[in-house]
Amino acid sequence: MASVTYEHVTKRFGDVVAVNDLDIRIEDKEFLVFVGPSGCGKTTSLRLLAGLEEITEGNIYIGDRLVNDVPPKDRDIAMVFQSYALYPHMSVYENMAFGLKLRKTPKKEIRRRVQEAARILGIEDLLDRKPKQLSGGQRQRVAVGRAIVREPHVFLMDEPLSNLDAKLRVQARAEISKLHQRLGTTFVYVTHDQVEAMTMGTRIAVMNAGVLQQIDTPQNLYDYPTNLFVAGFIGSPAMNFFDATLVERDGQVRVETKDFLIPIPENRQETYRPHLGKEVILGIRPEDVHDPEYAPPGIQQARVKARVTVTELMGNEVIVYLETDHHEFLGRFDPRTGARVGSAIDATMDLDRMHIFDRQTELAIR
Image: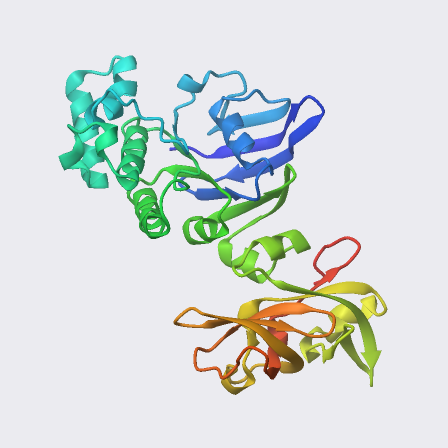
């Protein structure tokens, strides 16, 4: 098993900087997820680690070994691609064994590894089938199995679930997480889906425009986003944002928008007092906006008068679209809510869960 280190790694394609000064260490046996929108540099970062792209600047280590000039086949990694890339004329067994045959692994050892991987993935009865006879989920398992038989130091996965339907994606997420625990190997995973990232990664590296924005545990990314981009990207539905100013009223620091004025909790007054008069962005997640009748007990709350424009019943909750004169925002209400389209409501905001960002730098004020 092995750790992975990106040491000030940059990748340029002509004048385009795809990855800019990436500097992180992935610990042995960790499950690290690169996440971000299309074109953010996450797949390029993975391809640099795999040796499929040349590094422009910096170094990459697998364990203590510098691999900048090591061919992909000698890096002791295995990669699962988005397309699965199975050979259509080969059986499942032959697909899984192919890489080992190229390395002249003994037949007995190949059979042992393939059968063990098939057992782990629950595809023992599919070994004689061709890829065209498999469902999307089964093909995905075969692609993962082909990587497992390599017994690599590092698994690389590039959006391996993107071709699956929604229900199968949920199942496959759990299977890959269990696989990581069972194998005890370092996993580096790329996805644009923040739900996948939050549910699978021990840590998440959020990227945008080639730059690492924040790397942390899923819960810390959710609770303490370092900037406006991370706050808006992590969480579904996305965080609500309001243009605002920090002001002082009656000796108390407050957040003032064009539509409402809400107090800062007492334990955070001194944090924001040095920023009085500054233009900021107030952020609050939809799950922290409630129907006042069903707001959680004991929260510090402020009520905002709003109109209901759309409701989406989800069974266990109702997504409610709200608007004031100058803002639109979402709440995740208790399914017992009486909120109806066209009605007025005093939406309740949980003040302990609000975030404030400097409008100019877009960094969180903490």
